[in-house]
Amino acid sequence: MRKLLFLIFFLISIKTNSQTTRFEIFLTDTVMTNASVSFLVADADIGNVLFSYNPKLSLIPASTMKLVTSSAALELLGPAYTFRTSVGYTGTVNRSGRLYGNIVIKGGGDPTLGSEYFSEYYNDFVSGWVDDLKKYGIRKVRGKVITDDSYYDYEPVAPRWLWEDIGVYYGAGVYGLSVFDNSCKIRVKSSGGSSGVEILDITPDLHGYKFTNRLISSGSEENWYVYSAPYSTQGWLSGTVPSSEKEIILDASIPDPPLLLAEILNEKLDQAGIRITGKPATSRLEPAKLPENITILSETISPLLTFIIDILNKESVNLYAEHLVKELGKQIKGRGTTAAGLNVIREFLDKAGVDTTGLFIEDGSGLSSRNGLNAEGLVKLLIYLRARGRYFPEFYSSLPEAGYSGTLSQYFTDEVFVSNLKAKSGSMTRVRCYAGYMTSRSGKNLVFTIMVNNFQGTSRYIITHIEDILKEIIFEN
Image (cartoon, rainbow, N blue to C red; front, side, top):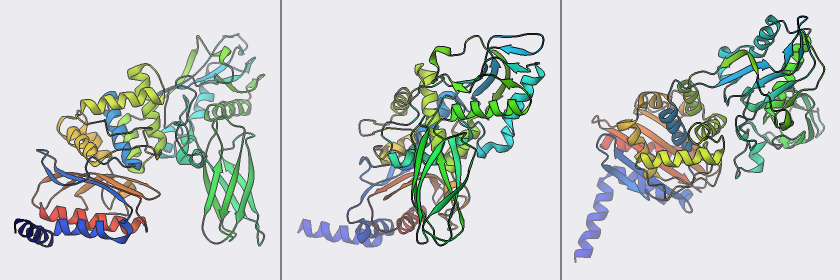
């Protein structure tokens, strides 16, 4: 009899509690038959759990991983932290302006140098370097332009990234000297009625890098791939582009940004009438000639870290996140490696009271499918940052705003969310995650994380369910 009464009470509670009903509808939908969910909502002020489902289940977080990386960087480096790129020379300059030595570009880990997100900030920074060298009186160089890219290690890509991601812009590697978001635009066009595709141009010019073109034109959808490895001299394009004669842009990664920047500076110096005898190189290519005793003539300072993180979270820039991982390793462990940076992040999570035994962290951006976070861990981190974070206002400001900015500009557009919900999204194939802050209709401050893996159907369908669930939580708390 007690079991029967309990069952009746349980069923009544489901029917009368619309919050539970929405979530139950979500779980019983056929698209969720093989899916996994980790979900938790808590009071942001006192930490009380208001709703949870598999809160400790570790799932692929995709870009919600950036919440961990960006908060660690802000708390440990500070919002005013900057990166520095220097240009100068080694050797001596005689009275006639002849340099017996090398022009050196010394990388300092700046993830934003020449970035399209900061185009007005950097302007034509390379021409600025040329002007500074000319003002010093350098007219000829008996040496070469060499990039010192030893600031970080020479392993630009996280070990467990997919091969199909590395050649595309969002899989660009991290270098001691990165430039132009380490990405290029390959402009292609279908060759009339044939099945061939023509490469029109590449911006920026990759100075001799070769792509084998195996693209074909077929149908109306884009399904192309760029395969190229870091430091390689050739790659290839494959897959399909629409068969119309419309131009298509393939956003690809630059295989060797430090060498490319040396080549660009070399070219601009030549155009300015400064003749150089040697060919451009990098410290990786010529470790025995690692520049020492550099006379610095020009310095380029990055935007403040708070502005970098604002773009990182709103636009979900993988490159920035991976740079910050290595920078954390460099500054706190003395090693500019991914492994050292991830150790710093784990220690940061421990300090924040997050149980890391069920967390699996392979990178800082969330691109690796081997990452594993859970709703409880992310909610605890978000509560910690709000209550004890030194730079919570800067962190909170960096989160996309529902229906307005960044990756949420087209989502959560219902008036109940607008100006009321800020969160980081995470998405990849069969993965949709959201984590952030919102306020209930009664004025209660809430923190939430919902992670969904291995669903069927479209991402838009899953997002609609998530919107319904969060909307009812806002109304009922």
